[in-house]
Image (tube, rainbow, N blue to C red; front, side, top):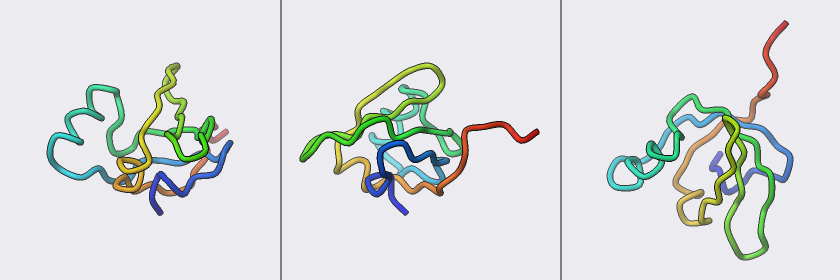
Length: 78
């Protein structure tokens, strides 16, 4: 599924990021394959706000559509 399909409060793990400038931009933000993210908010007709690693960033819907994620939990296994 794409990042743009996450619902508010849903957790996921980034599976793939397209090559090119987008990849470099996301790596600077700390988002790479394997990063666990939480969909903190979905702004109507606007960006998707993610929380991960103690930070919060907004990603435009177009970019969010290009990121592949799989639903997952941020909680550590006990």
